Length: 213
Ligand code: HEC
Image (cartoon, rainbow, N blue to C red; front, side, top):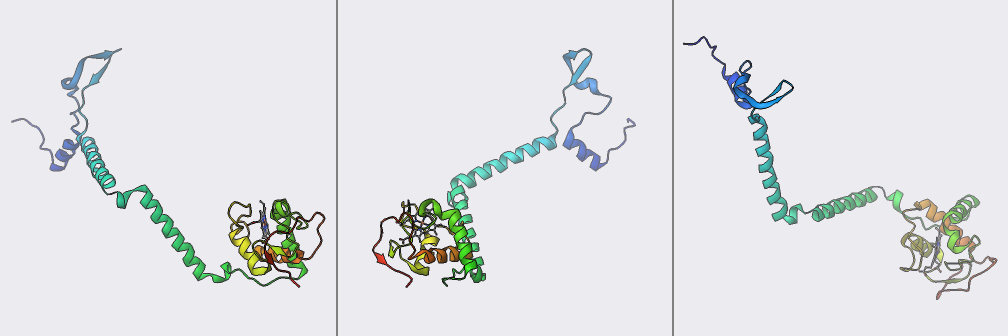
């Protein structure tokens, strides 16, 4: 009988996971013809724990492949995307419903100088390129006359600002650029231009007649 110490079960288990070669017996696994400048190579096996991990990833890969490619309804990227968009929209709607005061467009015409000045500023920033500073019109229609393509008055003008004009005409929706107060102010400013005399008025357009008088 040798004097070899009995290894504990735990040690045996660890040994089976690593298959580490006992120290002091390297010669057994030395690769004879691999020697460079006196440095030799041992032929260690891949540790079993690592190999099992690798096999598990292969199994997971097969499982995943089957799930994703045979169950497109549940796992396609498009479906996932659409589901996320639906969820996002529902959240936005819920937020709007919970905070109505933030999202209600106020159709009250503002006539005080402070709000009209604020409206003029918005107009000067976003609208003059197409409607001219005095509202006489350019790419966009004349905003000073009594003829309207989409309708005059606060409700119609706000509706135009909120939803944009007819498709392809150039009047976009401003609801992502302007907040509700700014829309109310600039709409009020547009109304205030009605009946004024611009320098180079564009010929009247539209079949709807509306004036603030
Ligand atoms: C890129 C050019 C462009 C810009 C910028 C623009 N508009 Fe317009 N706007 C138009 C055009 C074009 C129309 C006509 C839309 C149609 O025919 O449906 C229009 C229509 C309108 C109308 C309706 C007029 C009517 O006769 O019914 C209002 C009101 C108006 N714009 C206000 C504004 C305000 C306020 C801004 C700035 C926030 C603005 N627009 C910015 C081009 C523009």
